[in-house]
Image 1 (cartoon, helix red, strand yellow):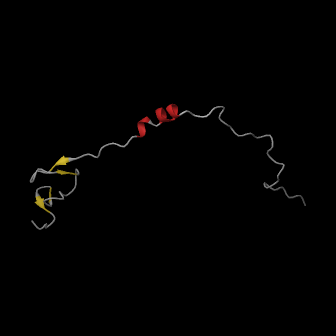
Image 2: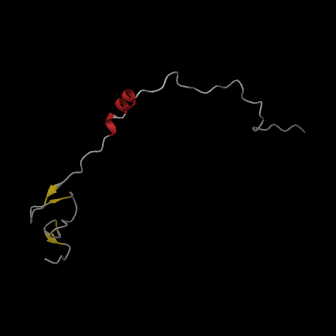
Image 3: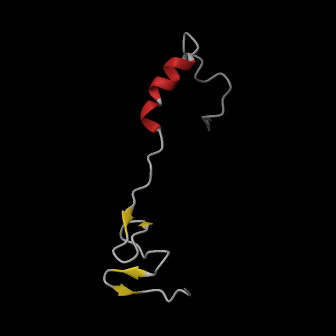
Length: 75
């Protein structure tokens, strides 16, 4: 009975990994990552109190959302 194992230490000697020829410079690395910067979060103005709030969410300062009071906040 012949058993072939993938754990054979001599197998795969002809396969080589890709290795970079030169070190990637800081400028090249930063150019590649230029589009990964964080964007500022979107804000809208509350219809009732005029403070900035996250769009499609309850206003944290007055509790107003879509024309009605959703949260009972202590004034």
